[in-house]
Length: 202
Image 1 (tube, rainbow, N blue to C red):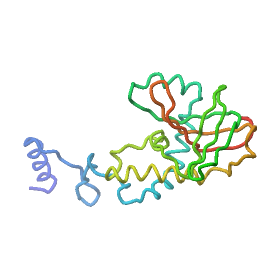
Image 2: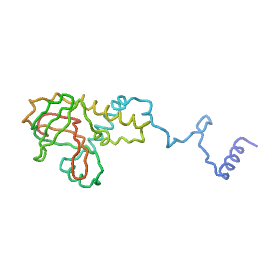
Image 3: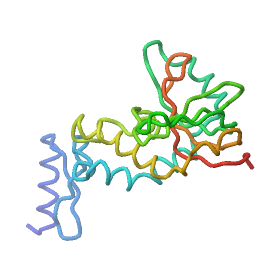
Image 4: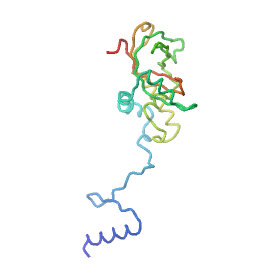
C-alpha cells in the first residue's frame, strides 16, 4: 500500500475510534494544540520584570482606551455590588489643594475634582491593588497567589518612579492626572496616581 493510502487508513481509524487527529507540520511532526491549562510565560519572570515589560501595553495603552471621567466613575460606582469592589482608570483635571508629606513613605496629594477633595496616593509605598486590577491582570495568569500579590507592589513601585517630584509648590495650581481608582458600592476606596503633570488640560 502506498504511504498516502496508509496514512488515510490510519486517519480514518483514529477518527472512527473517537481520537482527535492532530495536524502535522512540514516535517511530518504533530502540531500540538496549546494547553488551555498551561501557565503563562509570567511564571518565569519576576514581578518587577512583568511590571516593566507590560507597562506600556497593559497599563498606559489600556488606560488610554478605557479611562473614564471622574463623574462617570462616580456614577459607575453605584453599580458595584454591595461588599464588592472594582478598579478602573480615570483621567481627571483639578486644582491641587494640598500635598501631605508628613508620612514620607505614604505621601498624598489632595486634588479638587468636581468640587470635592480627593486624596491621591503618591508613594513611595502604595497599599492598593487598584492599578493591577484596573489594568486587567488576573490571578489565573500567575503561578500562585504570592506572585500575584508581589505584582501589585512591583506595579505600584514602577508607577511611583514615573511621577514627577510633587511638593508644596504644586499647591493652588491646576494639574492633570491619570488615576487608578478602586470603587466600592457608591464610594471610592483607593486612588493612586499613574501620571501627573501641572497645568490645565489642553
